[in-house]
Image (tube, rainbow, N blue to C red; front, side, top):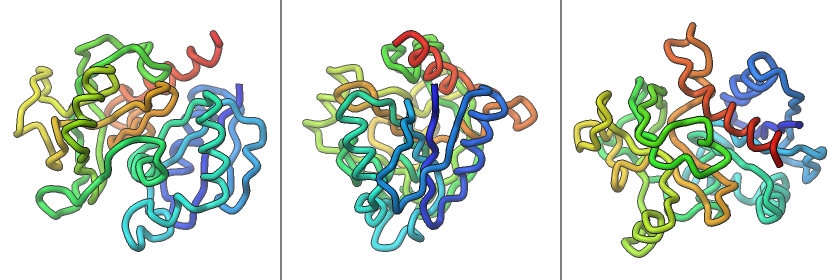
Length: 231
């Protein structure tokens, strides 16, 4: 299996994501430049965190028009696995690959800290190595992580079991105090209708080794590897 990591002007977590695949998963991985539509035959695309195109206009608004994202849209439509992390989630939402939008944090401040997530579904290529209700410790680092969608879309996400992660307490309780950015329904990550695209604001790439303070994020990458291996 082969992974591709997108690189935009302003990406700053592309090497973090690349390192997880190359050094921890020991899988082939390549960087994919934003100005090319060639995905180089990858089996999974990683849209990393950072500040694509400087976050001008709004986060992800320019990146959605890049040639590589046109290729990613076709790739996802064909069932290819796509994981968007932080700025990557914002880009996927702007591109229409995921519903809703990411707005400014409720406190209008950049937040960078460890948070806890509750696993809401294991029915996806990104969560098959997790347990429903399991609590993960994964860091966040964002200014626009406040997830919003219409009431109708929220009802659809719930009905179709497409909420992957929610911000929670260490004990797994969904509370307002555990919500770092004001996200609707404490949403931290969602799936598309085909369940092959995941967007999440927390950084599993920054929590895939114990020396980083938590290795819980590794389970998401391990799930992708398992899903690809059994296709």
